[in-house]
Image 1 (tube, one colour):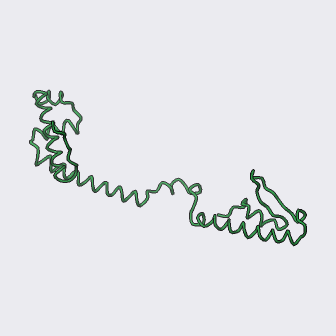
Image 2 (cartoon, rainbow, N blue to C red):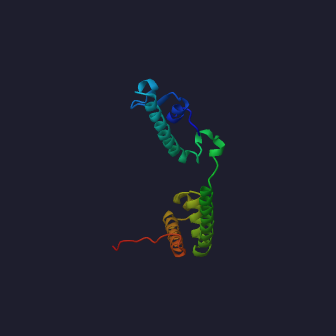
Image 3 (cartoon, rainbow, N blue to C red):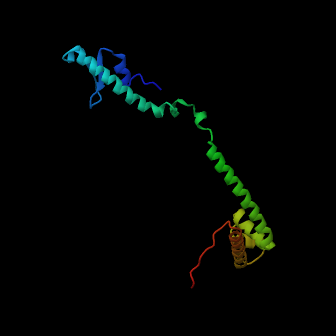
Length: 171
């Protein structure tokens, strides 16, 4: 995008002066009167024009091939990128595989009682005390049943490669 306030543009626009900024950012104009002769002014004017053009072109290499996010609408910047869609697809595929494995583990590796209690505890969020009350069982028995179900499911997930084995220190 062409910047009308760039030093190059200001210098090029004014053929009777060399325009530049000082260290404080103030615009300075050197005219023919500031030089010993018109030839000296013309030499430095040509040099400043070509030097500032090189700088301007170097600055444009990046900006000419890009667009500022400020000029885009909010809807345009809210579009999901292809990378995000791909990662979501991978996550959805992994989730589907994990659900299938969990169903397989629940149905083939747990007893009916363990499956029912683990479901109430993990999915429904019921405390052990309430599960024991509903099933007219001892709390300790329900707790042990849930712990055994968790261990079996963890072992199953390790065997299928979905979980890493735990290492315990020898006692």
